[in-house]
Length: 274
Picture 1 (tube, one colour):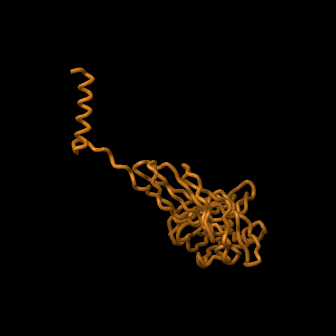
Picture 2: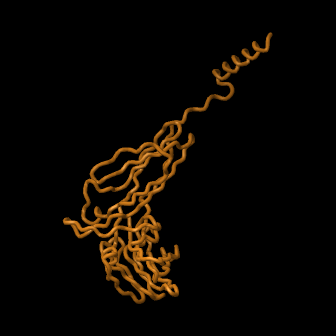
Picture 3: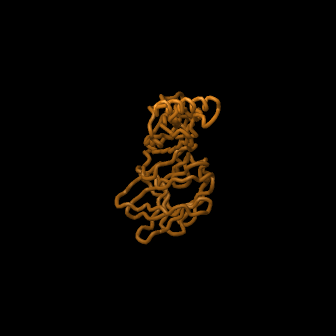
């Protein structure tokens, strides 16, 4: 018997054995969609600046230019081969984007007017995200909220700040006024004992300040735990600057002026909540 004949017989025997349930069967196809993980709400982008207050005939004011970012991930036995997003508006939905490898989305132009006086059908509420695995299965969509509230410090309390409660001030504070500030005013202190506390958002809280040559460092506590020491110094003035973002889970947030030598001043302009 030739070598070629032996190989043919062995191949035929293997095929018959598999058909009879002997040996290893072929793996079943993947029909399970990816496991998609998304945040409930987007982050505020540290290093960005929020816009000025925009007048509106239907309400007091609104603030635009709020940068927000969400990141997501997915896992799947077949591997993840793409993500797609879709804008969600107050009165409708956008189109799904093309599939891509992007795992985050930053929108620099979110406006808070929906929370302050009703918004409208074209108010962007957030983005839906879905994932596709390499076998072609698509996950159910999940919505990430992009709906901020700007609580402006007006020199006495937080305007539109009912969501963060009544702030508590300690030490010596004064009011600074400028059309360049959010709401036209900040609350400032230049002493190490100067602190302010308020209730943080259930998800993300952002801190907006005025930066400049005489500004210094501020300590950020969440639930009594030091989370960051933020430097508000800048060689040039930067107004309405987002200098901190964090998950606060409804805990008390306290900001304490570190009164850095030579740069003692801290100006609180606004608090962002989602």
